[in-house]
Image (cartoon, rainbow, N blue to C red):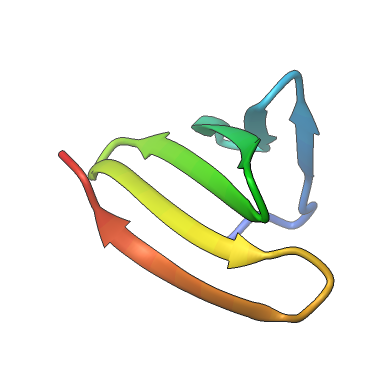
Length: 64
């Protein structure tokens, strides 16, 4: 991918959009004290688990 003279990145309704188009979709939800996040992109579906407010998280969990 070439370097753009103008950088653009915005998340709208869970879709991460850059100057190159839609990059990924993510959805977060609470399950008890944990926050679970699913992220779907061209390389697969990944997840993360975190404890909100603590800075503790496990990221990059490949699901599919």
